[in-house]
Length: 162
Image (tube, one colour):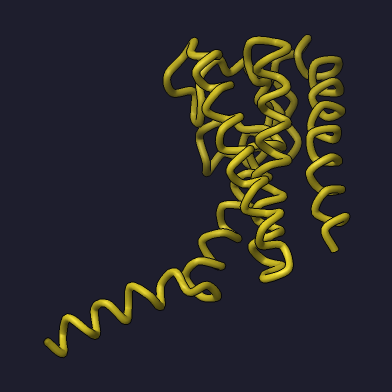
């Protein structure tokens, strides 16, 4: 089963770079392509910051931070992939998305964003949505399937009894 998670980690950054190349070739010259008018468009944007364009021009710090997070999730994945498919999927999505953005940040000095939804103002990219999906899976895992919340609940119950 580990091979599936490794495949996700390898395929996602490759797919992210393929999509970026298509966007740079077809959208960058125009800057904007409406896909579903008023709802969804492809908008070329060079993001030199982090999420939502915050903290501009911190490429080295962001690359180091991203690398550390990727290493932590890789260690957790290899230690825990047999315990939970949901956790392993979350970790693989976060690692794969992180690698996609890390590659762009190192090679280009910025991340190319292009997915623009009218009801969600920040322009994002495929890797961002992989990280977001992985984070949602991780939260669901922590809240409903792990011992993480059960330990806190036991502590609260013990304090109530005292």
